[in-house]
Image 1 (tube, one colour):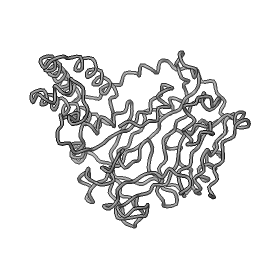
Image 2 (cartoon, one colour; image 1 turned 180 degrees about the horizontal axis):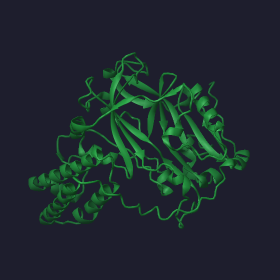
Image 3 (cartoon, helix red, strand yellow; image 1 turned 30 degrees about the vertical axis):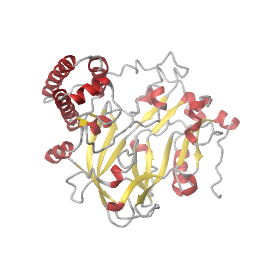
Image 4 (cartoon, helix red, strand yellow; image 1 turned 90 degrees about the horizontal axis):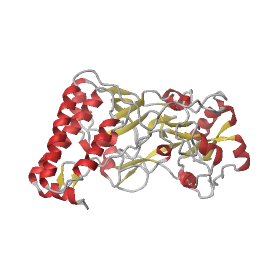
Length: 413
C-alpha cells in the first residue's frame, strides 16, 4: 500500500514510499491475491496451475535478486521499474494461456541471467531519467526562516526549533542524517548491531518478495541492524530489526535546481529524502522476524506504522523524526491548493518540511499506555496536537511569512 504523500514525486526528486502488508491468504498466486478483484489476465493465471507455478517461480526469482541487492548494500530501482514494465506491456497484453506461458518463460530466463551476473561487483546505477543535468541553484538561504506550523505542546518541539534557528543563516535545511539531530545531550539514536554474513542471509530469507518490493529504493546504501530499545517505555527493551537506508549523496538536491521545463517550479531548489529506516519486531533472541506480531499485522500497517523517517529519543522518550521534503516554489508562493491539507487545517497554506512526533503504543485493553510489547496492537507516531502530538516544521520565505503567518493552534482547549 503506497503512502499518499506525493509532494516530492511532483518535483522530480524521489522520496519513494515505503509500503508493505503481510497477509495470510487462502487462495493466492505467489505475487498477488486471487481472492480479491483481479484482472482477466490474473484470473487466467489463478485458474491455471501451470501458470500459477510459473508466477510463483518468477516471484521467487525476483525476490532472490532483491535479497542479493541488499547483501551488496545497494538497491536497484531499475529492477522494480523493469518488472512493472514487463507486467504492463508483455504479461498483461496476453489474451491466452500460451502467450502467458511464453512471456513468463522468457522473463524467468532473463532474470536468471541477471542473478548470475550479480556474483561479481555491483554494477553502477544508471541515472534517473527525470533528473537530467543539474541547473545552477538560484537561492539565498538567508531569506528563509524556520517556523512551527503545528506545535504539539512538547519541549522536544521547542528544542528542535531552537536548533534550526541557530544554524548558520546561509546553510540549507539539514537533509543529511548527521545534521538532523540537535547537537545536545537531549537527543540520541538507538544503537544497533549490524547484521552480516550467515545471519544476514537467514533474515533476508524470511522476507517475502512482496515486502522486498515495497522496500525498493534507488541509489541508496542499506544495512540491517538488530536494535534493543524500550520503545514501549515499560522498562523492558524490545528486539527490533532496523533496516537502514542512506542516500549515496544526500547533498545532491542542495547543489541542483529542479530541471523540469514543463513545470512552474522549473529552476527552483528542491530537497527530499534523507536517511530513513524500517522497524520490524523480532523474537527476543534476535533470530527471527515476528511477522505475526500484532503491531505488524493489525489493520493497515507499514512496518510498525512508522515510515519515511527514523526512531530517535528525546530525554529518553521515543520520537519519530520524518524525512525532509521541501521545495522553494512552495515555500515562496503557497499557491498550490493541493498542499493546504498538509497542515491538517484548511485555512493554513503552509507546507510542512518535516515532522517530529512521540511514539506511542496501543494494546488490547485500549489507550496508549506503555505495555508489554507482546500485547501491543500497534506502534505509531502520535499525530494529534491535542493529545501531546506531532509538531510540524516549515521553512518559508520571510516576505511571505509577513503576509501570511502560520495559524497558531490553541492547545489549551
